[in-house]
Amino acid sequence: MKWWRDAVIYQVYPRSFADSDGDGIGDLPGIISRLGHLAALGVDAVWLSPFYPSPQADAGYDVADYRDVDPIFGRLADADKLIASAHSLGLRVIVDLVPNHTSAQHPWFQAALAAAPGSRERDRYVFRDGRADGSPPNSWQSVFGGDAWSQLPDGQWYLHLFDAGQPDLNWDNPEVRAEFEDILRFWLDRGVDGFRVDVAHGLVKQADLADWHLPMVPLTSEGTEGGPRPPMWDQDGVHEIYRRWRKILDGYEGERILVAEAWVQPAERLAAYVRPDEMHQAFNFEYLEASWTAAAQRSVISRSLAASAAVGAPTTWVLSNHDVIRHASRLGLPVGTPRPNGIGAGDKQPDAGLGLRRARAATLLMLALPGSAYLYQGEELGLPEHTTLPDSSRQDPTWFRTHGASVGRDGCRVPVPWEADAPSYGFGPSDRSWLPQPAVFGELALDRQVGVPGSTYSLYVSALRLRRELGLGAGELAWVGGPDDVVAFSNGDLLVLTNFGSAAAELPEGAEVLLSSEPVNGRSVPTDVTVWARLS
Ligand code: NOJ
Image (cartoon, rainbow, N blue to C red; front, side, top):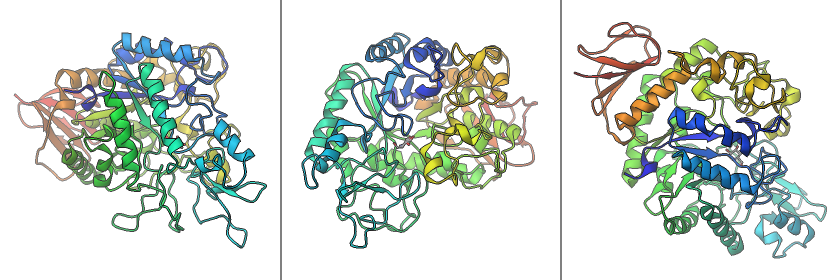
């Protein structure tokens, strides 16, 4: 069995994981010092969000040099040390690759600015003349709000599907292709086990850059199922790039992997990214977005398993990451609420108790599913979104580009609390933290949860241990019939049951409870609880 087919992969957001030098921003030495936590938790791999030199216009997703480490995060030698330390603990390392755009400070873009329209330097990006009336070349909007084009003093415009500091590369240009193949080799040679590929569905644009008038949903714009496909996403030509990359990875020892961040629907189109000669995995955002109802969960699980099975890839599962409201808060919003892009102090606040209860149930359900699962730092502590961040501390470009209409993603990026009674809750040696931590982070700090029966941390440790012992990631799901508002399935000898209904659900006679997201009494499973049970 290939390691990645059932791996549990833990996302570290370097700015917010652990700060070694007290400047209030997490760094690679900080991560190294906390790798033991990941080994103790029981995950298989760590995925690091970008740590490359960057002006940080989008928290590092604006890369100015793909082959180095930003001084705020450390040095290249720290990256090497991190990879070696992780490997010595049995953890694999996946790094983030950002190929859709560079930073505006990247030497290529600086050269393009200095060069003339029509030059070789400008051809590495998407430069165009505006329309006769002086408006941008087309109607595309940035995912972060506002026009997707910015104009230079010489009159030409450049495309940026994200921030103006993130110019889109021109993937029809062979120099761009060659450069990224070289960047892959650079990190493969340093020993990384794989790449999470940012905006994997965006590299190739429809050649005519046709206008697009439907709204750009934050980070996604798949169009409607069966409707027209947006000209900036999921173009067929993108697959050829990944087939080339796969060949490069296959030339290295060990199973190195490519993971697509592709907000693509339906599941069958997403599955195209993980055909046998392309990437290994793709994030399952349809699962993340599914409502907290039995029908929605059953349906997304079935569709996901079928779509990936059709191409022989493992299904993946994810509930939280650095772009979405943490699931402990998201699930505390009324069922069916469309996922907001952040929650601010003026917005209706989630029900924290209900959110955490459902989050624990959701996680236990997820970790019993066959395939590979992604965890986001801090979810093992049950961290909620920071929903009352002061506007003055916000840094997400979405907040600025929408003029405050969308609060954006800062609330899920708040530094992790390790010790309840330390400055910055043990995030670093000083009381500095690039985003303020809410008071509740004290109660949820790791040292308040380790060894505490019933804590969210203990639940994750037990679930990950059992998942491994029972081989759940490599198992097979079979639905078990029952009431409509109960999701029940078997995976090997394990019965998994989540109760979405308002009345208690009953486990079958003889079922022995191995683990539950909340305490259960006998065979009765309360509302919003998941149980793992062994059938005798
Ligand atoms: C997806 C990343 O996860 C997100 O954080 C980033 O803003 C965009 N891609 C643009 O790189």
